[in-house]
Image (cartoon, rainbow, N blue to C red; front, side, top):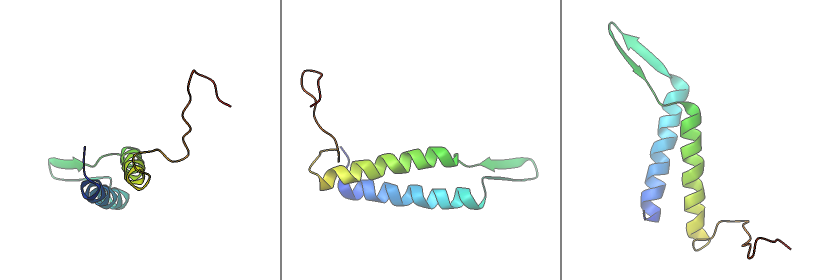
Length: 74
């Protein structure tokens, strides 16, 4: 399992990549071209990392979740 600092570093890298995608999704020069990852893929990864980081603050619990035992709520 990744440490909190590793998750935070990865999140910062994803946010930087998202900024680059917003500025230029793809470009080419002569016969060469580059296409960056899709914005929606980055958003999904960012949300997942933010969720994992939040779990550290909650000692491993997912915020707002309620355990269900026996398949019944309430």
